[in-house]
Length: 308
Image: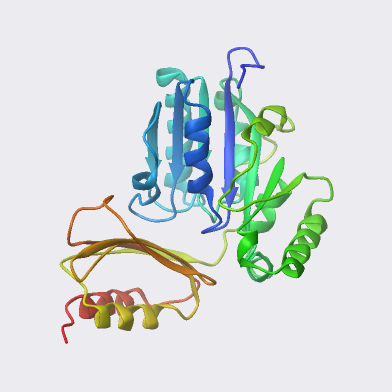
């Protein structure tokens, strides 16, 4: 990617709802831009960094913000400060920003358009990933997915292999109702010719509103942590307890002597053996619309200690 704007750092913003495939795409970008000095800025909707542990090795420096949604004033301040620090101290040739799945893209655009950032950062492209399994449901009651599509320069309809063609067509129609001109690509595992990113040009943005005036979606998250080993029956009890109204669950679980990476949305649940976490580590981020935090924490501890 070339510096088309003098003295400003080319920046790609990755958006997409929880579980859409942003980290998978980010790993592809790490490989694609390996010849450039790159900084990754990752904002996760949770108190610990899970995605950062899943990144491939490469020629980049990683900065993580794990305090929650950008609607929190402390996180907005941290985001602005970190972008300014990256631009002035690290001075990369490329900045890749992975937004939390609940980010309102218009809020991020306002922050990047602030005078102290606008003179240092050039938002070249905003890429939105869509989970074809869940988009039609979540767009009916959440603001973030609609904002992400509306601000996108490219939309990737991801996980098309997991739904029938008729559902893909419905998702395309829904996207067109939000943005009638944005280019759309159908993908699996966020795979597409990455050279297309170099042709994208994000419209210039001016900071006409103060960041933070948007309305956050009514969701919350918290982190569950424990040392030890789950039995299969204990883990099954916990997952049965949290699945109703689940929006997102990700993290690491020690199950009967083996460590798994767990990746779940309302429509899909996968567990993969991994070496990314230490043995007997249980650390997951849970996101739901409604839950009683103390009740879930107690259930997690109870099931983790369960033995047949």
